[in-house]
Amino acid sequence: MSGKLLVLEGTDASGKSTQFERLCGALDERNITYRRLVFPRYQEESSALIRMYLNGQFGSHPDDVSAYTASTFFAVDRYASYQTEWKDYYENGGLILADRYTTSNAVHQASKLDGKEQKDFLDWLFDFEYRIMGIPAPDQVYFLDMPTEAVQNLLEHRRGKTQDIHEKDMGYLKKCYQTASQLADQFSWHRICCTKDHAIRTIDDISSELVAAVLDAIV
Image (tube, rainbow, N blue to C red; front, side, top):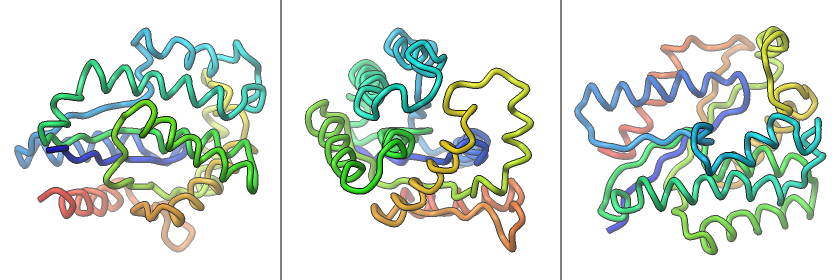
């Protein structure tokens, strides 16, 4: 009996890490048993090529590495995690919450492509990870819909800190948001709108909606 895999996705500065922590805390308060995953796993050996890629060792711009090549870096890390950390738990009916997953490859790498090339890539990606590598497909993806324009100042402020090659490229980040919004519609992701009347909603407001949606799926 397979378990349930729920994934939280969001582009840079969407508040994803904060919302994931709050979601886990809400489940802890209710004594709901689950496993939490955060990708990429930067401290693990399986993420070595991810770190090299994001640090710019293969090129200073995201487009310097093809969508297919970069995707394999992240896929290998997920495969290693599944095989060594949560396969048995999941296959015995366990609940998994993941901060990023294959869907992040779909957002960030598909943004390097357009039209039929993008469609062909997405077909390849999901077949590669879910069928060939054999990791589970998510039961539901929750997308924190935070338009890049809404967090422009925050992203600019981050420029004073160490950033990877994705975070340094504002044009690329805007394209990633457009791709994520498109995929949310295409694959019926559960969209959590993070703005209202052109203003960013409060952390508590967003968290309440996300927690309610996840509890509805698991309780």
